[in-house]
Image (cartoon, rainbow, N blue to C red; front, side, top):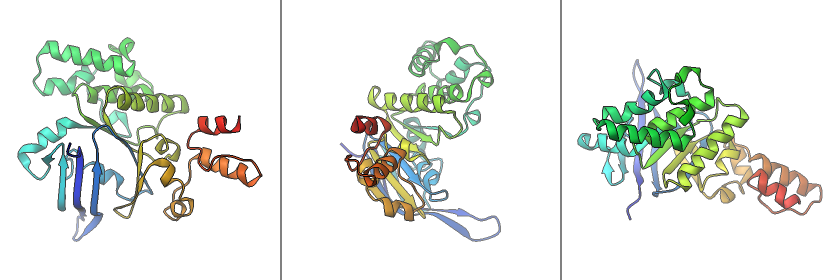
Length: 276
């Protein structure tokens, strides 16, 4: 089966208002398979958001190529199909909420695609069930908590039936319980619904939950591997301005104190189990 997302020599430059340009991506080659859970990390300005905006044709390459489910984003007649396959959830959910009630907001996407009312109702009900907001269907979105708003944004994307969802730092504005609820939802969508997940995050603890981690630096992908493989390179990550997940930091500290622990404890649960 062909890769779900593939880029070859992807280069992108933002034009400056006066003259010249800023190169944000430099010859990126990456392949993402259907059903993967990929975390994208890197210092601010490394090109993470610019890269993922090419995956649903919000941005188009200055040079190189992007294919989504075999469709080239360089072909104007295919871009609508690309955007049907890849949905995005942004950092601030208020930027995605457009209606007066939760269910109206979720219905916005299917309505714009001209689906019949019965099908729209079925999709809204299904999306509400998946994100656990059935009891809030008639609530105004602006009256919900930050975490609930993010779940409404996810439901709105789910109602369009994408094959892939990109999450652009979705937990950065959430308190710890809402953050955990969001991560649980993301994992469930990947495991139970088979949705390809791409998560941009500044949290190394969140990145450790993914199947695969991509590290960006100055518009290039400089590291690519499993969380255990990536976080084994402590010195290199530090040089890139990144830290280790807290459980790994704690395990390293305890090992220096004489405790016998595995070389990598990616999650708090793994660390607790190792200590027990």
